[in-house]
Image (cartoon, rainbow, N blue to C red; front, side, top):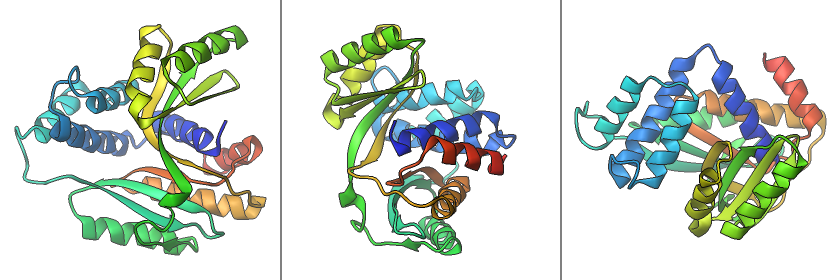
Amino acid sequence: MSGHSKWASIKRQKGVNDSRRGQLFTKLGREIAVAAREGGPDPEMNFRLRLVLDKAKQANMPKDNIDRAIKRGSGEGSDGAQMEEHTYEGYGPHGTAMIVQVVTDNRNRTVSEVRHAFSRYGGNLGSDGSVAWMFSRQGVVTISAEDDDASDEIALVAIDAGAADVETAEGVVTVYTEMSDFKAVQEALTGSGYAVTDAQLSWIPQSQMTLDEREAMTTLKLMDALEELDDVQEVFSNLDISDELLAKFENEAA
């Protein structure tokens, strides 16, 4: 499993267990509003909105919160705050490349907070295009699998639907797709009854960087600090993360 997929799994679990669930709901609400604004309030006609609503339901986000976010995005009940998406690029303290996706109503505030987080851990916020060339934009679908037979079946369905690559590790199947095939693959998997735990467009590193334990832990702390910012939706990195390192980071962060 790629470093990003393992990091994303940790962050999802952290989100479920985090006592500050309000922050998670705020992030999801902003993403719902942006998706509704771009593609309309009907999830049957708006694939991106449907994906975000699936995440919101998995996080047990209250229905009232979801409805308010959809109305805000579609122009009903607007509080006057216009949410915008932005992508920032930078380098971690030991040269790892990072892409930070945000949704904000105040770009100046957000870029200041993101720059401060990078500086605090010895990294640097870069200019547009400074690291994006090291990544490819792909769809990523994560599915729980009970055994090897189930994993093989999932892989076959995904490949038949147009998946570019499939990885299996520890009961989790991660399916990678080109952006143009993402919707078809995700719908083929859900239509076949598989338990999709996450589906999103991601930045996947073309190659990964390996650091020693001390350097990697500092980099993970930067990634965690960035994702703790209210405006940050997701952080992507080319750090190669081992299972042992993730376990140690989880224990220290608990």
